[in-house]
Image (cartoon, rainbow, N blue to C red; front, side, top):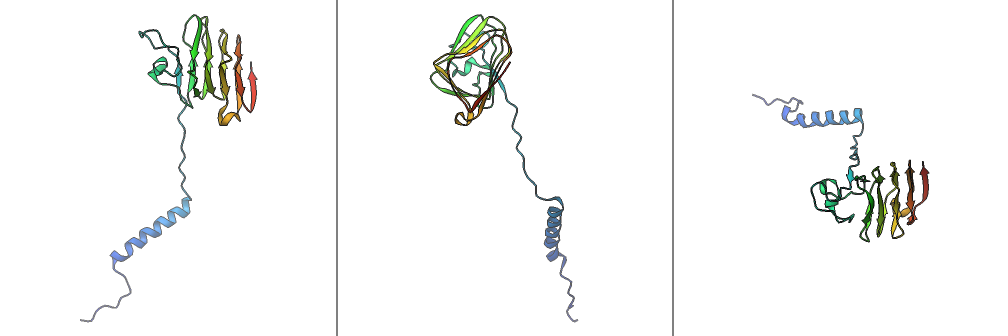
Length: 175
């Protein structure tokens, strides 16, 4: 018997080419595929001065136990000073720089927060309750991007005293 001279290749050889052709056609029809990273929403870290049932707090910003979930606020988080206390509450920044997404003063209890001895790096400060708060002369505020960004400050009631040095590319005051 004579061998067949058929030009038809065996099925095992053409299968990879068919798959490759199908993949190329799919890519042409759909275009490039890009991955998009969606950032997580900011977490609000609330000053709790050691939390319920704990001994009196240290009033040190850099002490994780003084914040909700015993976690320091990070660069994208909202640092909320809203603990219902009375009198002046002086929070010591420990001579360090602390970057947060925003700093909120939001308590209506007679507590006045005073930040001292360090730097807050943020683009947003908000005061929305009836108590006066302040950053004293030993505290500084610097906006992100090495002070090039604009600082947005919203004060809807009472006063927010920024006695500190402020480094920013501009200041927007609301309220």
